[in-house]
Every structure is written in C-alpha cells, then in structure tokens.
Image (cartoon, rainbow, N blue to C red; front, side, top):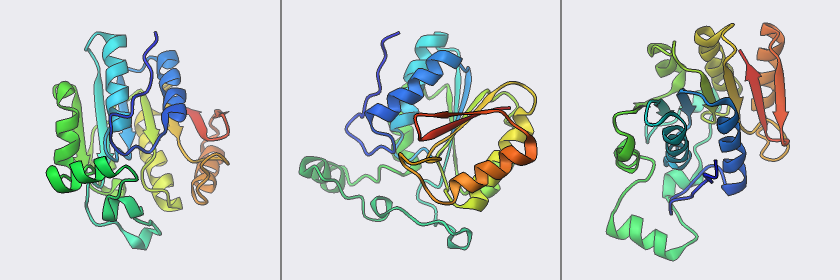
Length: 215
C-alpha cells in the first residue's frame, strides 16, 4: 500500500515524515474506528480518512475532537499556539488566499468540515475541551486513538483515562504525540508515565517521539 502523507496546502501539526510514521502504524494495525484528539486544521484527519477508506473500502468511522476556536482554559496550564491566534503563513500566497480571499479560519469546525466533506458520512467532529466533551461521547467502538490535543498534565491524563475506560482489556491502541525528544512537551511525558504505572500497560516508543499504548 503506497499511500503517503499529503499536506494539502494547509497548516499541519505533523510534517510529512512524522505523518508517514503515523500512517505506517495505521497500515499495520488496520483500525476501523479511529479517534483523533487535536484535529487542528484537519490535515492529519484527512490523511487518516483517505487511508482508512482504502483499507476498509469505505466502511470506517473517524471521530475528531478539538477546541475549534473555543477559548482555551488557561487554568489547565494550556497555552494557545500563536498560529491559532493570528493564522500566519510563511508562504505569502497562502496568507493572501486564506486571510484575504477566503477569509477562512482553518481551525474552525466549518473549515475542517468542508475540508473533510468527501467523508461526511464517516466522520463526527466534536467542538470543545476534552476534559468535558470526551466523557460525553460513546467511544465503545474506538479501536485506535491518536492524542495530540491539550498538552498539560491534567488534560493528557484526563484524555488517557477516559479513552482507557472505553478501550480497557480490548487490545486496542492509544498513540500519544510529543512524548520524547523529537517534539517533547514537558507535561506530556509525566502524565503518560503515571498512567502506564497506574494501569500496568505495555507500551512501545516509536522513533523518539510517539508512544504507543496497548489497552
């Protein structure tokens, strides 16, 4: 299967190298019901949907969580990325196209929904802070979750605990971004480590960036 990560002329949290590392994991595990926390502008989401569509011939689901422009909770020690506040592009053509022609916020749920319209019958997007929204959803069928949302200790641990409550003892998988040196974010690692210790989960560190947990 030769499908490779595409950037689609939008902002993305993963570059092509790390995007392909994620896609290779999906090719290996072949999940049918995928969940992403931290949709951002939808580039990773679109790539995942394209790949799952190939693997399962259209029979898959994708659930995405993001603030989608909702005010960030500074009480959780979260920091709003500069891009989301100002939507600046290094490429002047992109900057002119999105900010002056389309006047479109790429992180809005409207923009992401339009970008993923090809898979509108397969996807569900949920707006809000996952400390609240994640526990309000039925995630029973999720067999692969990718966590790249709020990076505070509390939010990371919350996301892990809620996902685990639905996926426990089912040999499903949770992948966390920004765990080690490649894109290390200070509060992610201790939250993941405490979760592993408490629940005695097996794990695999992938290329010094991701950590893959088996539920």
